[in-house]
Image (cartoon, rainbow, N blue to C red):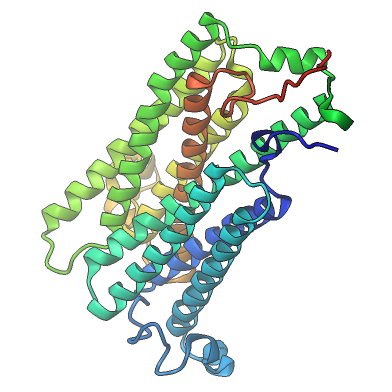
Length: 382
């Protein structure tokens, strides 16, 4: 019995998909714990690297870790989570190199492992050099890696779905005979998009790509706000915060514009769900951003209704003075870190949407992937 051509058999394994999803699932709490490390200024709680106070990272006494100082707990925990992510990334590479995995998955998996190694090296350099600039870069690469892995998981799943569709349409029999079972749904999926569809998707691309760029810049500026150099002037911080706020408003407008645009596009069905989710995440992010400012720097006096306070016999200054900022308190730490983590979710969502629109713009098939290869041998029938 003969088998189908190699390009037909190329299909990501279920193990590769599971490991990619697991890697994304570990990376998100890793970002959260990393945010806590920054919030509590615990980046130097362990002065050596890659070990922990002279111990092998994995052999450090768990009693000291669990019952020691809080900053030691989160810093060492951050390292262990990072090591776990690295092990999963190695497993993903191994899973992609065996069997009939497509070439693009092998390259993408190796790239994921390289990113994990680079992020770990940046974390170590941040400790050994005690340098805030390195911490800023480290804080940017983490969300970028999370977005990459989430997008990779989606495309592995999409590739598996398309491979299963092809397999259900083609039956390989003895003597190299191939019997085609092309259902109306598969035929419709294989048809090239119309000129109108391509034009609509490319119009959407002109909105989605600027949003992706704006979100990426916002992550960088946010990292600059979080890791202010000790030698920075007050003007540096004010400028960074102002840019952060302006970019946030731009992103909100862009995300709402995409949702509105999708209401009138015939090809919107494939993108409407993720676009709506992105808009919701943006709203949550803005709310967390305002809450972060309040718990860190007190309530802005310009937002206080002076007339309302005056009617109660109170002054705005007195109202604001009654608000106490508890530095590194539980509420402040959770809200600030949630703002960072939710920003990573936003970057992942926008990256996924941009990749889907890009592929749909240049793909020759409605299947939204690389060109589908169906083996046509002598004796094929439909």
